[in-house]
Length: 188
Image 1 (cartoon, rainbow, N blue to C red):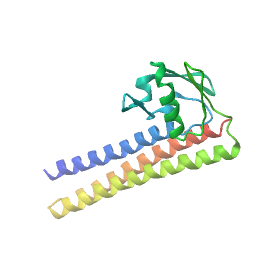
Image 2 (image 1 turned 90 degrees about the vertical axis):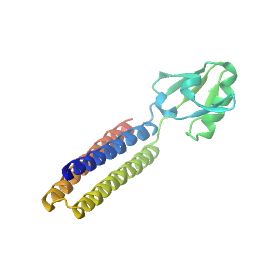
Image 3 (image 1 turned 30 degrees about the vertical axis):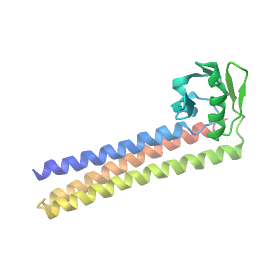
């Protein structure tokens, strides 16, 4: 019975750590690396008949080249709302409206800006590591509580070791994701 509870806590810790890595990847997509990507606008909300609606539900977003995005609203009257949302999102870009479409041209990133983006990515990575360590702490506290309720010391030590292995693996994944993003950002 106790080992089943231990397995449950280990599984829960693993899931929380995996979620932290997935969230990191989702957040890093929003950090632009000098290349235009429709994912940059992920999460951008547009007022549509008084309701905040994701941009992807009211417009088509695609790349025309490596540095340009083309946004084609499904309804022409949404152009001003989309423009307003882009300005409010403070993405560091200026949308250009031609009456039917909105173009976003990304300026070439300077060395200094790329270094800032790497710092921003590392901060996002540190947040993921904090989440992973939090999951480790919760799992270890749960193991200690099980030990007080009668779990053997050997099983508790084994559980703590497994939690640490999960933590090490998750942090290694975070470091690998960050390394890949840094290479992407620093590549001209």
